[in-house]
Length: 334
Image (cartoon, rainbow, N blue to C red):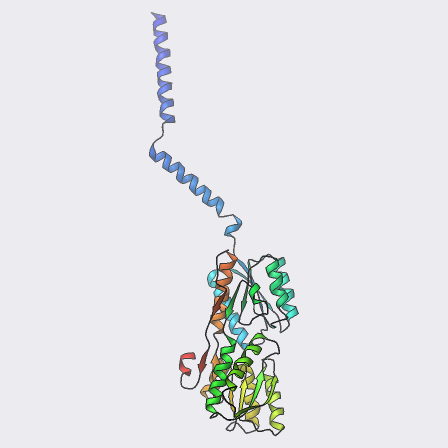
């Protein structure tokens, strides 16, 4: 009898253990879903620390931050970089191609994700593009061109030839198709200087009675243009209009003209539509300017650089059109 009780007790214990083990190893759909979700969350947390999710870093070299138009580009670049939450490294080429080449070498050393080049010199900045391409870092050229633009990832800017055409065509019409002009050029060899000159000359072919009596560079600089215009006025040559390849030089030329008391005799036009130029158009000091969207170029350059830095496909060029600005349509540009 005693033996029988012991066997029964052992059997009960074994049965209980089996039932408990079975409950512990059973799986419900809800339990599987919870486990899968936990694994997925853990996986996502691990992915968040991968290099692919790191903050995009972009280096930009400006041609010269002493120029108001370039400062407008910088303002747009910084605003867009902040909006997109990227790290931005800014440098100033100070009007020297060799500075920009060195700055791009530093960007390469810092392993930036993309580079934006606002070149000062069409030919002088060629090595900068070559170095970025060799390092397999996307390089976006903005505002001005380089001779090896085909090697750049993308170009963001405007057709500088068209700006020259617009400027010269309006000046020719205001002159009645005849008279003497002087042309104040940008830095020799700068892509905008070359292209704007070509545009001006294209229009002049249609106006044989308009003569170019003098032309010289003032390097985009207001003070240089003022000094140059003073020299031309002192020479005694007859001048009916000044075709300046940017607004800074147009404003410098006008200051010299005004000081000589000839503001009613000589028409002046520029390019860029910077705030000072718009004010001068409003006051009748300049007959007009040509709007170049500096902020549009700067913002777009950052957007394209971010896309390229992420390995996304970008277009070879993004063109932003020029527009003539006169007293009649001034309000829409102010």
